[in-house]
Length: 444
Image 1 (tube, rainbow, N blue to C red):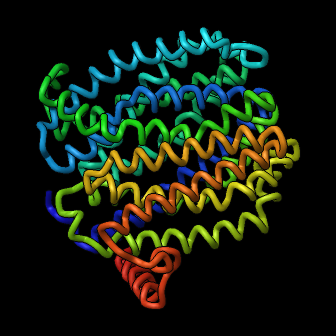
Image 2 (image 1 turned 135 degrees about the vertical axis):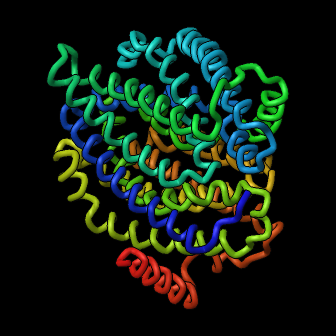
């Protein structure tokens, strides 16, 4: 793969940052509108539906999307074979696994109490899991092909399309706001899949063979080692939603979902960095670029610290302004989530570095440890502290994962922890120079 220059990488990072800011603004508007229209109870049920879909997706992903990113970056398999394998895997295995998961949830009496309403959406959740598997894999392929500009445009559409569909369905169709929200998700994934397929046809024109044994074997071989990392990572992110819904009910979950939405606004910077850096870390030459990961960590952590301080000072008014006074109780759990969000941003970058070094198994073990701590802490603290207990549990687990991943990173790159926590004096000069360079380029 042709190595990108520093100017190209900086340009991609700046594009990703701007695109992420735009998509975050649109997503916040959508979340705020849906929260106000649905109310805390229905918003909690909607969050629970999404959590079930995301965890089922993670459990059935088999590390396929991560394996696609690795093999596309290394050009170790024909692109057509990988895209055809993804199509067959997403549709056939996705349908079987998601259907099996819905049956299991019925056997364990998950559809009880306030959750009974979700039983009528089991088929919808099965379809959403299939679409989620497919679009996630397509995103990874596009990213690994260095199509950063196109990927950023798609991310903006991913935030904009559901907002438009929700408003049109709510105003024009004789359906409830909850059903309009569900419909907006279905339509969005279908549109994105069609758009990405059209884009990828330029890289791989013609027929995509669905059953290439070699491609399936290699993708599953790599993905199996990192599969549990994906499962535990999604559990780490969403099991607090499930436990809050199970232990406290739908309305408190609605407040907690808004606390998470406010706290996750800080993830603009790490997500903007990981988009252009994915193919960089996954590529065959990534091991020689020892200075990139520490600098990315220092830059991200510094921005995250300032962002956390801003949310502590102004987060209450932000929640009231966006979601309404009905969600004002989300402020306290949001504050306790902030340390964990900083740890999560650290994990998002160092995780890519380790996966690029072909260490998905080690990353899986870290994710499992953090997930177990999160589960135990949630079961202990939610009954005692409510939503604050869930936020504390998540923060402890995220920070633990960050520490363990850094220990893995230090096995090949011995660094003192202070060299990845905040920008050093020389870094400020570099960042200032990059900003001036970027502004100059834009003026020209």
